[in-house]
Image (cartoon, rainbow, N blue to C red):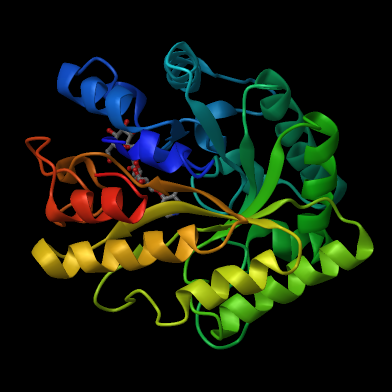
Length: 306
Ligand code: G3I
């Protein structure tokens, strides 16, 4: 196999990219997207501020453009994301109690309903835990006003809205098997599985740089989540750096996923470096002229391609 998507497919995995609707008219971008990737994640277009900017009024235009493109190419689609403290329209923060609860459930039901049958996995809840050593829940409006139960409620609502989509909890800095934040997410997933709360996957965002490098126990971390009976997806992979050092870090991440059968796919968070959310960085697999970087070849090899 000579592309990322084909190489990943040989082991039954997908290889995806975060995609922005406003680049779909660019021929080089689309050429590389269509050639290399078998899954897409809308980078911003399915977030709450984009899909329900005012209460009860839904706008799916940009997300639909990505979904239509992906479907025309036979690509899978990851849904990102339903319940998140960021990119949340202001009106949500004005709600309390049962009013907030019903707005959350309605948002999940409407957005998942619009795409029912088209999304292979949804990030139902994103980034609900604090950084640092506390292992505490992030004090979002949902946490503060609905309490711990909001995550479970979101997953139950999501299961009803699209029973065939895999339901994921997605977060960053949960890549180190022993970190407090990882342990907190692990304990939540274990509890959900024990009590029959519907959850199918954990998304490891895996944004790495020199301050947060690829942990030495990254594969062990994937294994410990998989052992709970959920799939693991690497959902937003990017690694700062360049040249051989960057390539070897990418290789390690992909090898770790390949070693665990329940690690079912990898998504990189953008295609060429200049469209990365890390404005001044070079964390992706293609340079700003769409040339393949050493990291690209390391990933292709680790997937079993050449
Ligand atoms: O759409 C507006 C545009 O109208 C305006 O002129 C422009 C001026 O700033 O902003 C545009 O919105 C920006 C949006 O990206 C679309 O480009 C926002 O300011 C900007 O904050 C937003 O950044 C996104 C970020 O999430 C927001 O939190 C990044 O593109 C996106 O890559 C990033 O993705 C997140 C994942 O969703 C969750 N995990 C972390 C990851 C990286 O931060």
